[in-house]
Amino acid sequence: MFLNNFILAASDPVVDWDLFQSSLWPMIQGGIQGTIPLTLISFTFGLLIALLTALARLSNSKILAGLARVYVSAIRGTPLLVQLFIIFYGLPNIGVVIDPFPSACIAFSLNVGAYASEIIRASILSVPKGQWEAGYAIGMTHRQALLRIILPQATRVSIPPLSNTFISLVKDTSLASLILVTELFRKSQEIAARTYEFLQLYITAALLYWIVCFILSLIQGRIEKRLDRYVAK
Amino acid sequence: MLVSVKGLHKSFGDLDVLKGIDLSIEKGSVVAIIGPSGSGKTTMLRCLNALEMPNKGTIQFQDEFNINFDAAPSKRDILTLRRKSGMVFQSYNLFPHKTALENVMEGPVIVQRKAKEKTKALAESLLKKVGLAEKMDLYPHQLSGGQQQRVGIARALAIEPELMLFDEPTSALDPEIVGEVLRVIRDLAKEGWTMAIVTHELKFAEEVADHVIFIDGGHIVEQGTPEEILKNPKEARTKQFLDRILNPS
Figure 1 (spheres, chains in turn orange, yellow):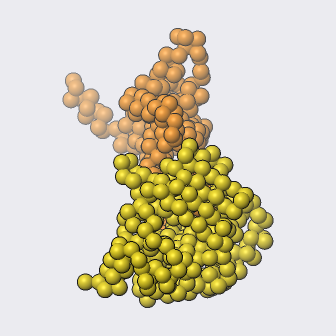
Figure 2: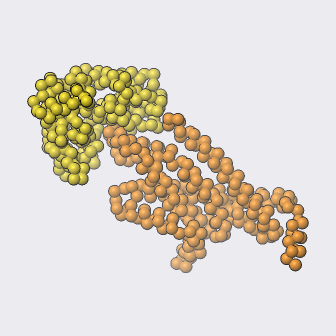
Figure 3: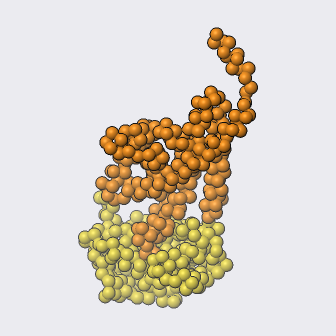
């Protein structure tokens, strides 16, 4: 009986091109309406949180540094999926109801904030101490030296690891399908549930993610090259 | 006196590096600071613009500004002190993401909030003065050590400091290009800049300095004219130091 089914399934055409064509656009739409805005919004807010967290950890205030440390530890020490569920399914229990899309944005921003803060902190520390001193010596305040001298140099160092964070984020946004956000992977799930062509649809989804990430890694290379112009080869 | 330093103390943890430095720098004079490594000479220079924070003592600029380190000084006083002096570092510390011209313009434009166009003219004339008219648009990594150090000097001059501080400005350079940097410093001396120079170049000190300070063990052991200190030192430690430098091996 099982064997029979197996043979039956195997004798189906490997790729259903009609389905491929009809499913591709809805999936791309899911990407444009869900995956891309979710990624861009979360990364932007995430970087902002990350910069503030990194500065808090590097500051002289023990309270700020401690708070930042706890935040990073909590986010890095818990699964992203659990964080998503707490925000979307958990918070309504205490009367905080947030729509799927903003819930996902909050979870992903907090996540990026924690991981990227470590990257930013390390890249700030990688700038030689003499650079701070050269800034101070021409009369700069701490803030001027940070903004004009240190951060531009730290940025160059942080681009490769931050690009990795960004690319991971693109893929991680597929988790938002589990809190009802309409994005690329949820679209493929919906069509698969209707047609039972799980393999083909999920592989199509995987290919779309791959294409996006491939393009992003090309862009990463170009940015790195641009920022490298003042560094000895 | 342009600068009067009194009772300057600095320690790093348990290690006392400066044990009470008293020092005056006359306006328009060149002070050479010499001494063995670890004597505290670089720390002393860095205390003069609070890159190292002294633990005790005062620094007075003419009659107009006085900063006391017995208690932590205010941020404003530290900024005021720093804006009175320009510093040239042993390892140049140019901003690698800015061209030579941008390095020189950074202080006047960002710190002193001067107009960009005016500053550009000033920066160009300073780079010309140090012999880098052709290199203004290059990044530091495209310049030789001697060229980078000359940009460093122009950057320090650009904020029009009352006092120029040089921290072993030629120690990181190849011997054959030491001269091009010393030449620039010599020209500045002729123009009447007030300068404090930590250096190992005794011949240069003898020629350019008006006043030589010998530091050892966190104290000023001896000070006077180059003739007095370098030719006829009174203290045994000074003699020993000079002897080791002049007759190595």
